[in-house]
Length: 151
Image 1 (cartoon, helix red, strand yellow):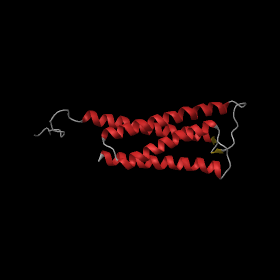
Image 2 (cartoon, rainbow, N blue to C red):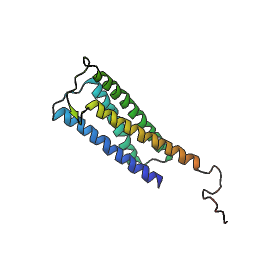
Image 3 (cartoon, helix red, strand yellow):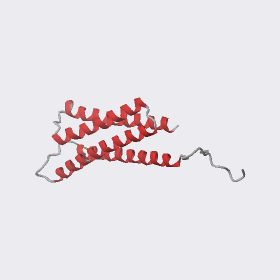
Image 4 (cartoon, rainbow, N blue to C red):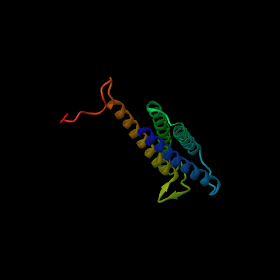
């Protein structure tokens, strides 16, 4: 059951990443916002994250492969978080960057930062879950079912 659960989580995170990529392309081509270099770097991190999760959902890896895919996603999220955070800091300086679009008073890099942080938290929790499950398995031929007190 844990593999089916992780496979569906991979698929849901792929859908979230694909939607975020779709929004970025919509803002570029339909709205006419020209992305800067940092936006393109964040888009590349998002594309790598989305591609890794699509591959994982199609592959349906075992326990070790699941751990590797979550770790890959965590690194992509971390890279996206760092670039989005840097861009948010640059936008705080009035001479460095111009904010051309907002939604609920948050700029595109701030939304990107929120998304990457959420993906980083989710990936980190899944890695901790995988480590927890791996440490709970019996090491020898002993049963994985705990004996009841009445046995």
